[in-house]
Image 1 (cartoon, rainbow, N blue to C red):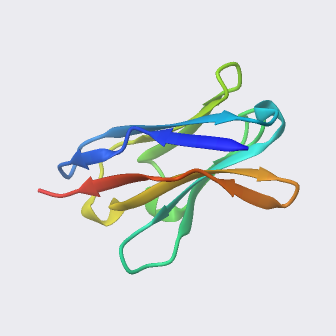
Image 2 (image 1 turned 45 degrees about the horizontal axis):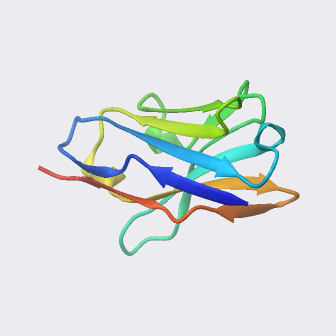
Length: 115
């Protein structure tokens, strides 16, 4: 299993970023995918997840209405569109593949929201 995130960076409050996670080494379309984040000094939290077909999504309350998770099973890629970013969204964002009861992780990408 290999997961490679991209799209992080620095943005001002109110800005947008789109994260991508390219997957390989497993049958991507069979498994739920997740985005996590870890803010400085805090535990990692689940931000959003999406079913294997992309028809069911879930979000942590803090990002509802601002973030959108999606996937393209033809491209083996999962996305996280982040709008109206806030300083508290700052952290390392990692994608994960939930396979047979455990997460397989990417290396993460830094998102910094600051004026």
